[in-house]
Length: 444
Image (tube, rainbow, N blue to C red; front, side, top):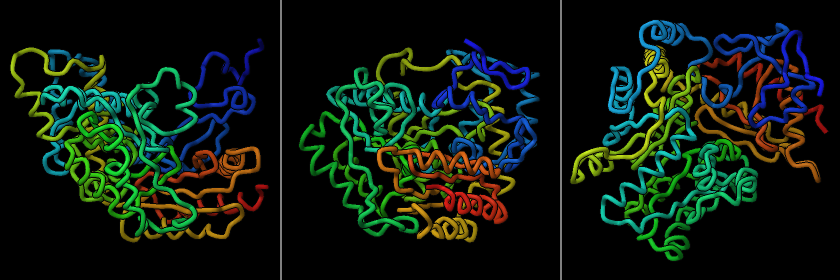
């Protein structure tokens, strides 16, 4: 077949992820460089990054300390394995992360992505219960519209319908799902966390535990704020209630903080924002501000201690990745954490800035096609009514027209997601939301 071309660039050989490849290659959106809040396209246009690209560039693009840390590390130690060998950087990064977590969450197992972190957390949960003498605890409970990456285990506990349908024959058995927390009939256009809906957590004790038996359930895994499911903000006290129920029944609670971690809600982690202490927390994305792939699982002292105090010697946990604790990724993380600390970015998504963001999103109430507005910290979405017979088409059109106006936002079906870098200022809100408002007036 004829290979699509952009100048001298042959587009045929790269099979792009989560992309309509044929559509993209007919009209490519090509990025040449980035700085702070903006991309520069191949044809020289500036595009405001309204989603920290994929919920990850919290420090902004090409920040000096991060760039220099990666550059310096590449010339000193390019790679060293973490299987029975060590180098200082992952130990330093783990200690820095432990300084930011709630008390009692102090032990970090590194992966390369959020998808790998999901697999890792589920494996830790299974192994933990086996060591505790409860090997029957093998079931997992996820949540509708939840997203935990694209490995088969993550899709299994996730609740994004299109992902599950695509691989239905290969998903893990023994998985059930809580209801999601969205309710447009009673909680549309709520600012922040709704005052009603915490009782949705009771489904765990009222339906799921009686159905499967607490003695057979290993863990419940949820995102504090569901991202790829449409930016769904939990009702007030919902997570506290879920936490209470899991503790009562000896079930581990896993918080997927791949999006909410590192300042998105105005605290280092959402666990602190919601006042809970999970047994395991997943992270990725913002730990390196998206520069070099890095992720991981943070384990409680109780969970880690169970492995370290087990009888017998040898490997405590048969799991790991070739690139766990990679030197370049860890150097990027240190540069990122330094940037967060020096610029106080982990607490910036609150106060006047978060209020301005909230006001801007909720100003869309009454705009064409808008049926809901949602926000918390510096993450939010507007939801559009789907076109009859064409769900997602309206959202994708908004995305494409916003790009033409120099603003990048994320279509999630008919939801338009916003998640700007934490260095965002009022002028960036003005540019982003003005573009969206203008586009909505042109969309049928």
